[in-house]
Image (cartoon, rainbow, N blue to C red; front, side):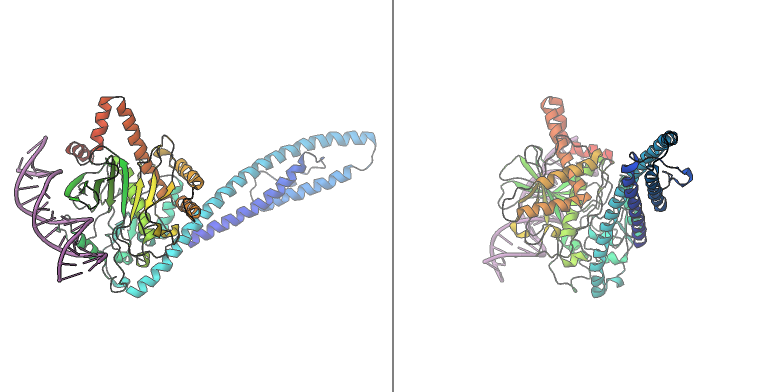
Length: 531
DNA sequence: CGAGTTTGACCGGCGC
DNA sequence: GCGCCGGTCAAACTCG
């Protein structure tokens, strides 16, 4: 990476030099039309196709000599001689004009190239800075806990959490950047080495598409659904002795949406394993497990909102360890990226060097054009208070397609600023969306979100303006969250459209209703065939 | 008959 | 230590 950065810097410097030359030639261009021709030595004239700075400097040299010729031509002489000179000057003037035009074009091309290079450089710079920061927090953890002695099976993870990124080698990062820049679907095939052994959550292996598996240390014949206690115990291997901090539980992503069906259609197959009436809400809470894969650790809780029974609150926990149906990728990406943000951003110091509360994964395939990538909090050093199940809530219930993003108390990503976590659940941002969103236009969406986020400055209390601005910047710097929002909003808009379409047709309405039922057998069958 | 759902029992964390 | 509560288990039940 350093080599790559140096190369990039070198290219940038070279480009800067070009820019200087271009500026010179640009200034020269101003004089071009006014400049009378002289004894144009074509062999000394700059070739527009040349791109090195020395040639650009040659341009200025030539032009200067031409300007001196202009002074010379102003000397008094005979009329014939003047006419002769005038004709010659006209020809040369046209020639120079043409050259100036070409130089201008070259100038524009180089400017564009420079802009692109600067953009790439900044992106790469941020990436390197992020990695350096992570290394900075990783090293003391390894030295203090002796994690290097722990042997763990080689794991490949799709995790969006910070842990996975630390262990990617530079080549993989470079390739990932290339894939990002090319707008290709991210594979997120991260390879976890032994240093990742302190992962709380099963870092998981990755299948060729988008899945990962439980660590091999798990017994093959273990129960398909190990108790949470087992998960957490295994997840804290070798850490509690070093850091007697409260265990950080899995990050959760809660999605609020208006839905008449028992559950939201997120594309996955779920099996209900329990139901409980929680305190404060007369509506029972249903517990589901993902049944797409036998050992998928993903669970979800479904509960109707006490205030508005039409609102369905679906809380996702864990990450899929299997390929997802296409219909499930959007929501999975949404929840994974959001959970990853929580994990990487709100985790305590201990998680900052090796133990994200939830190893999240993503299909990274938002309908073949998604860009869910590693989420790196700009400021991983900020501590959070004791967190149990940090939760991010994506509110899709607001009218006019205005999803809200909430963070549970003390779970706001650290880079959103200290001191705000005590405000409790609150709508920190308001994202206005267009009537129709298309995941195939991911980049357009991202910029769209950003522009609106940055405009969304409606303070409700002191400091909110700063907070909103910070959030906007944070989201702007995190394509994963942008894509997550895009996926969520797309799902939301899609459902809205489906409902609208259903209003006009009973048949369509029925289809929508069927689609909306995830836990139901009909839907299960269809998804099953799909997967 | 297999898969999913229901539901009471059970467990562990947390607050008092 | 006790009770509350969230979460999970597992036997019984339902359904196709």
